[in-house]
Image (cartoon, rainbow, N blue to C red; front, side):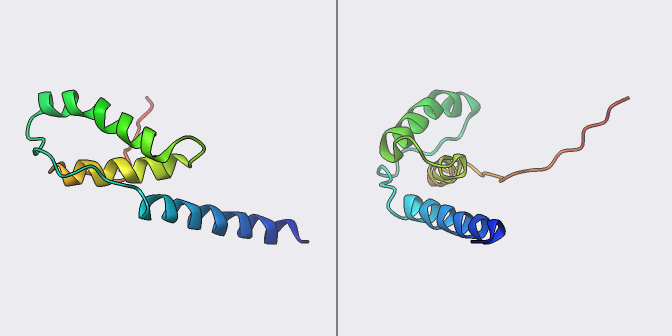
Length: 90
């Protein structure tokens, strides 16, 4: 089998597994809106812990990222994915 073909199949399978993880991710009931930085700081560890317990280990980082995005948006937090930033050196 061609190595490139295997790589494409692995990428496709990985993407499908990620989508399944999100599809079957059991979200907690919508709670109070996170309106302040203090509320965000207080709630974030709980959200992350819940996601970790629900999805378990061995998921792609993107799966956890998507789950956190879903939870944060559910609580009224605007999330910007993969925002690029310029880094100036000297």
